[in-house]
Length: 354
Image 1 (cartoon, rainbow, N blue to C red):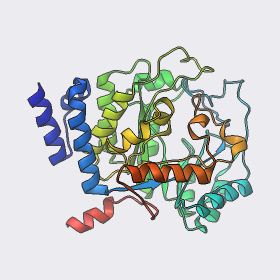
Image 2: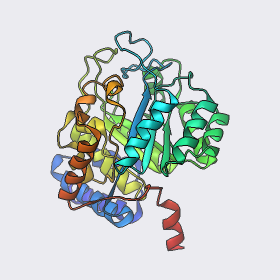
Image 3: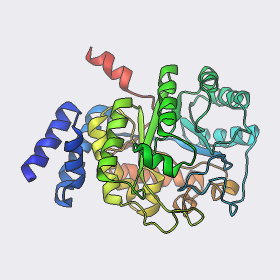
Image 4: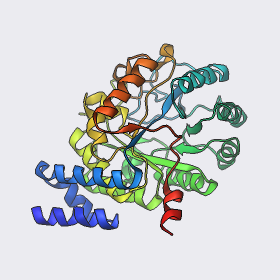
């Protein structure tokens, strides 16, 4: 078995491709093989995207959401959450503050909140582009024409996680919604020219090793520019409150295999991983990750964007001090902080090897 695992990892390093059975075997193997997997992922990361870590500032500008996902604290049925919306000026001010301390990418994230119409989001994108930053949107499922308008207004990237590649489990977790619709959005975004991000949760109730393998294969099929993989964290105001959180070790395995399959993708060390494991970011950065996404939302709103509990406690430091801590952590790992906007290296790499 040990030799077989080594052969599979070696194949993934060479070919960046694995069968479903190979992925299942890696994810199922004993922890004694994890070091070799993480070391291989770290080596592939260094070869293809280098040692620089990209810091991307997230502004969570609305916690209203029309969806009722079973795992999420923002679900519309949660009456225990105090809701908020930031206006365009407040969003711009938060972004300008983040830029002043060194952020070159701003991520605008919200629940699915139609109060912000297409033109309002486009106007915000235009204003932010004047700050000289890359703009990432994470606003959920919206019509194709809105995606097109926002891209023309300057949005560079769009993040919309598929959460699980199991269609039946997706339907159970997202009442009235389908995985097919989610994938359609991802394909539309790619067609429009966005740098596209997707991803999944690890440890969802009803999830299997086979499902996790399918998650990785879907990310490979979509050829995403970013893949966010984090643990499920139960929220007390959701139907999944009594379930255990996702395992840290399996999350790191998923991240490492994602790096082997998607050598040019940006892979974040997620806040969710940091929330349930104090050294989660460091371990992720040593297992294939090359992005950290600190929260730069104004302090009066930060603790209200509670997709899972204790999220705000994981980033309780003020923006300047928090960035300094991150820079020190990254330097201690022998890595550097990127000074560019961190656009996808896929096109640049393809030109270099052609």
